[in-house]
Image 1 (spheres, rainbow, N blue to C red):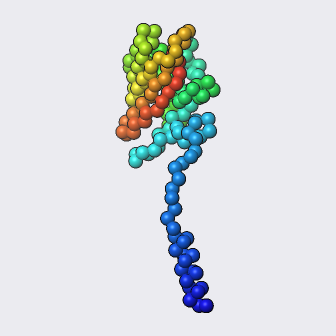
Image 2 (cartoon, rainbow, N blue to C red; image 1 turned 90 degrees about the vertical axis):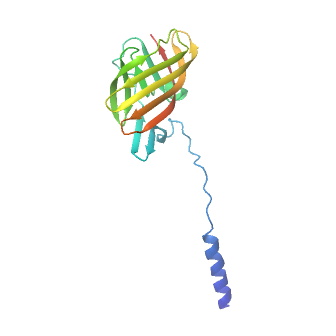
Length: 162
């Protein structure tokens, strides 16, 4: 009987130490449900890209983008500019107004290109026109490079127009 208890205990001990299989994270990454898709981590630290309402400073022509079509329709923007000289974003919890260095002519081009710089960031906006009526709809990418070497690229969806 003593050996039976030892044998049963050994089997239970071995079966409890069985390797666990990891299951991929099934958490949806839509920004309406999860905010982790706006925080990027690398060896140097965290980096956040936050949504904000349309800037009151923009009065006329503008470009504004969200992470996806759903966020765009819900007015959760991650980038906006006045189609001239100032771009607005909320990075690392701070709302920033930055200088546009260059911008393509949206009326002529099928592609959109913008370069923005500040003391801590270099930002590049690239997009292709997907629809053109009164306002031009674009899909593309937004790339942000911090001075510490952190680089984040994410998809964007939005429009430019007057």
